[in-house]
Length: 304
Image (spheres, one colour):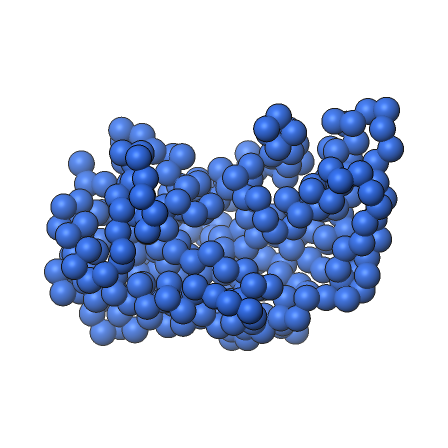
């Protein structure tokens, strides 16, 4: 049985896919770091290294999730330009070898930037407001060019906010850490910023199901999100409630918003998942529960 590869398998999203590993759907991670785990292959992402891996595995599906910067850090330093270069190497090797693998590029909702439309759908013109979003858009452009010129079966996935016990950065982890310190705190913005939060397990289910679909159009990106759009103030209040349950009898810190926002961070990232539901069917979302997954996530952080 042909296996699947995850380039950047040691990262949060790549590792989320590896958790789905089974006899029926074997997945191997590719990482720049040395790993003792048999589930990983080490690579420097050079042409020869990537070619050797593809010749050995002959993957049916390739997921590309390499890149570790955020909107905030991308203004200071970023490995995403390098990541885009590695992605181009992968695409070139695939075309030179004439492999018919499906390639799923992990882009980001950050490519939308600030829009006049509330619900972000795939028909909107990208308007990235940070180097992070710009670099993700460069990756999408590479997918499109190789699809058009070499008949590559490539797909751009615009992934909205994800969370899980191994994601120890971004909104939910940052707020949890502030509550843990036990002092009142201030958060950026006004709390009205909108985000769509998808648990890593649910993300993996969606992407895995997409990878098994035949005949997905290659000329349109796909939003990958929960379809539940929440104000950041609502998310922080939900975290506060879970934290309070774990600290009965102790005062839960209070919080306020500074009304100052990080440059380049879009105010509204409300997802439109109509196209995703058209592809997968709406029933796949029926078991997704933000409240229960948030509770599980924070439970695990408390236990570690």
